[in-house]
Length: 405
Image 1 (cartoon, rainbow, N blue to C red):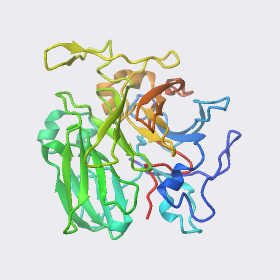
Image 2: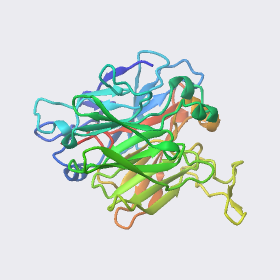
Image 3: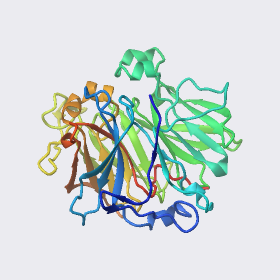
Image 4: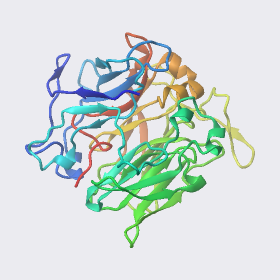
């Protein structure tokens, strides 16, 4: 899998001005709450994939217009193709974020696709995936998806029994990069994928989404300086929801996660991180929707399926996969591709017809989620044919790429 470095100069894209919203010091904002008061997003970058779809085309970074006053609202307005075919673009990260706010020499100029996790020689965990760090606590924590030889072939439950999928968190010293501790999450923590600390740099608490177990796990520092965890079983029916992405609002008030297989997005009040409260839920596809061969069975034996609305005349195929929240916390963007092999296995129609992007309106006062009926990005209508859409980034940073010190 190749690593591409994409230079994104603050200028114009197809005549659309891209504004650098960084303050007069370094990039980003002084605090998470300052970021929440930043300008509304007008553009969003999306990793778009042809790898695994049967099309011999390079993956590309798409630019989507998310300005509701624009004539090209909810359209792909620019495409930056990769130099090679077969990259399978996935995650991305900026060369600088709000952690460099005090450095006037730093500039948010480079978007790296895909981002990689590092460790010192001789301290390599069995598997790696996502990571997050909290500089004031001199700690970075990484997750563990599984062996590429397993997950690149599609999902096979036997591979879980064979130990080819992860269930550990790896605790590193920061910035030294020395592996200090490994936490076994056990059978309740299978396939830990996305990980987030709270945005407040003084906090020593965060969450990790364990996809196969459909659990959110809260981790925290103990009194002796080591790290521990507790499992919070928020879903886990017999068919896993497959929590493939989650994020935390910049004020640390709400946590949002997706159930890729079930098809819903959930909003939890985490003002007390030990006692999350479900305050919002919306169905945007998935295997539980009406017309699917899968039905949900209640404890009394009755069955049901859920209603999923069309958006701008489009039936919502696949399930919610990656999400990105506006700085003010009022708009949630969602795509529906996980990984081409898994898409083909669980949602072959997405591979055939292409991905979409939706926008979810968020009630930040009482809680609540609803689909914006006027926003639908159709990646099935791309010039080179249908493609798969995955991670999203704002030019000026966001709650899943900015860290404060």
